[in-house]
Image 1 (cartoon, one colour):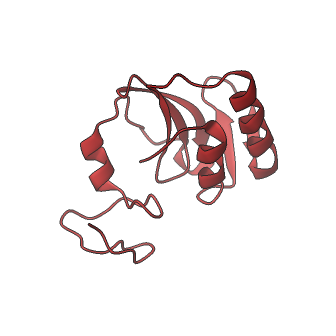
Image 2 (tube, rainbow, N blue to C red):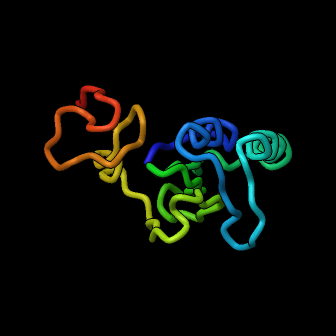
Length: 120
């Protein structure tokens, strides 16, 4: 999972991974064209606290991580609608995903299978 300081930044990354989302607790749906303006407006009207950040899953779902621990999933990517997403964020979880494209990494990998990025 990749962390971001604003919903707009998270949405800009998420649109590279998915082409549609639904709001976590409703049937409201969003496409690329509607997600980005919504994210911008949200950042302007209700910025997150300093200790919080947004996360984007490898499939493009967007969650709010409060107090660097609990994840409240806001937008679920269409491809992940039946996926169980984590409820808690752990910094060690970052090592399981490529920092360039967010793809899940194989244990002990030196390069990302998806984008070819060299891993640290």
